[in-house]
Amino acid sequence: MEYDYLLVGHGIAGAVLGYELRRRGRRVLIYDNPRADAASRVAAGLMNPVAGKRFALTWRAHDTLPYALNFYRALGQELGEAFLQEVPILKVFGSAEEQRQLLARADTATATGTPDPWQGFVQAIDPRPIERPGLLAPLGGVWLQGGGHLRVESLLAVLAQQGRAEGWLREETFDWAGLVADDAGGASYMPGGVRAAQVVCCQGAAALNCPYFNWLPLTPNRGAVLDVAVTNLSGAQVLNRGAYVVPGAAEGQFRVGATYRWPPFAPAETLGPGNDDERELTNRLAALTDQPFAVLGERRGVRPAVRDRRPLLGRHPQLPWLSLFGGFGSKGVSLAPRLAALLADHLASPSAALWPEASLARYAHLYTETPAK
Ligand SMILES: Cc1cc2nc3c(=O)[nH]c(=O)nc-3n(C[C@H](O)[C@H](O)[C@H](O)COP(=O)(O)OP(=O)(O)OC[C@H]3O[C@@H](n4cnc5c(N)ncnc54)[C@H](O)[C@@H]3O)c2cc1C
Image (tube, rainbow, N blue to C red; front, side, top):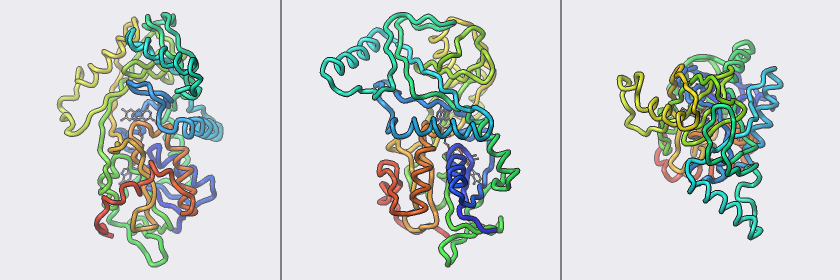
C-alpha cells in the first residue's frame, strides 16, 4: 500500500497532525501502540493562557490558543461530541503578597498606558473572597478567559474507533529497524508492507528511543494526576492554585494535577497508596476546598520535555522524508493544532517556514553522524 504520510504515534500530537493531513486530502497511515500511560491519555487537557509563579502569558498564547479552541470545537462538531469545555479558569490567590503584586501589575499598566500584560486573557482580578460552593478563596483570585479543557482520552478513543473503521490506524508497535529509505525519496516499512513519501515521528517521550531523533535534547518528565470525587464543589470553572482542579465528565468528579518528576524516577514499588504524588496533590486540593473528597484513582504518564521548553518539529537534518512532531512538554493540547498546521504546510512546501523557536533546526549543531538506516 502507498501513502503520502506514515505517522508513528496517535497521542494528541499524532492524532491532531493526522486529522490535519487527512482534511487536506492526504493519504495517511498511523501506527500506534495505545498505552494507557501515554501522556495524552493521562492529561487533564487544560489549556491555560497564563501560568507559573510569575503569572506570565504562555508562549505564543495568542497564536495558539484561539486556534486550538476553534480546532477542537470544529472537530467535536464533526465527530458529534463536545470534547472541549470552554470554561473560565480561576487562579486563586495563595497569599496577600501574590494578590498585591498582581493588582500592582495591572494598575501600573493602566496608569502608564502600557499594553495589557495578559493581552485580554485576564478577564477580571477579584481581591475579595470568592463565594462558590465548596471553594476556599478568601483572598480572591484572577479569572482567565480564552482557555478551557479538552477531554483528551475520550477524543483519542473516538478518533481511534474511526481510524479502525476507515483503515487509517494500525494498533501495533512500530519498529524503526523495519524502515528502509528508497531511491524515489520515500521509505518503506517492511513489516507492514507499506510505503510512504513522508514519515513523521509523533511518539511523545518515546521519541527518545527513536534511532533517528535520539540526538535531540528530549527528556522524560513523569507526572501524576488524581481523579477525585468532591460532592459539593462547583464545577463551573477550572480551579488553579499550585495544582489545577479540572471538572470531570460526571457531576462531582474532578481531575487534580499534576506533579513533575525528573529522572531518576521513583521505583514502581514506592508508588502505592499514600505515595509522594498522591500526598502532594491531595494537600493542594485541600487548600482549595473545604469539602471532604475521595481519591478514585491515580494515573501517571511521561511528558516529552525539551531543554528550552519549546516543542520540536521539522525535518531530520539529512533525511528529507523523515520528520518529528513532538517535544510538547506540558502543553501538547493547546500547542498541537496550530503547530500541526504549520508542519503540514512545511511538509507540503519546504519554503513554508516553521517558527524558529519550535523548529528542530535550532538543535542541528547537536547532530553529528548519520544514524543507521
Ligand atoms: C500527568 C500529566 C498531566 C498533563 N496535563 C496536561 C494538561 O492539562 N494540558 C496539556 O496541554 N498537557 C498536559 N500534559 C502534557 C501532555 O500530555 C503532552 O504534552 C502530550 O500528551 C504529548 O503528546 P504526544 O502525542 O506527543 O505524546 P504521547 O501522548 O506520549 O503519545 C505518543 C503515542 O505514541 C505511541 N508510541 C510510542 N512509540 C511507539 C511505537 N514504537 N509504535 C507505536 N506507537 C508508539 C504511544 O503509545 C502513544 O500512544 C500532561 C502530562 C502528564 C504526564
